Image (cartoon, rainbow, N blue to C red; front, top):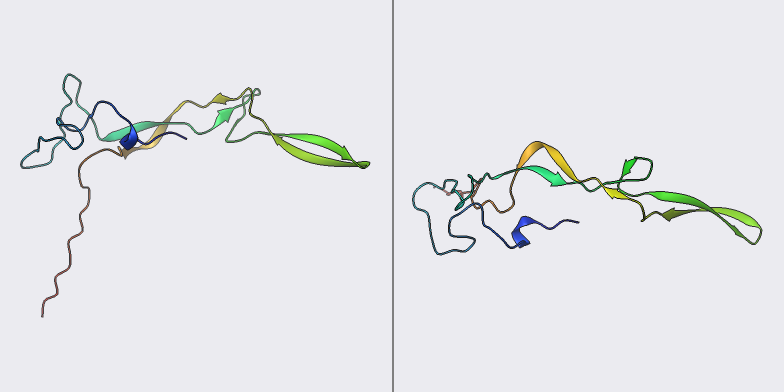
Length: 117
């Protein structure tokens, strides 16, 4: 499976100070622009596909081949998983954009309920 963005190392797109950096923004939490790059967006529009194409062009998560085994004069069918000649699906466009896992803004905050008497 793929790795989440929070475990990867590299350029921090959502803030100028980096994750855990010393620079703090004051006032509103706004989208910061990455240094030297176009503006960063908190949305993810594509993902890595989890399925594979086989030799016939069929798309599935797993492929099996039925093999016939003869044991003690009895025929028995057994499924054998195919690992070779599979092509990864590649990048898949998401139907709805998702928020990036490393986006550092609190979307919803729950406040404690006060008990008035």
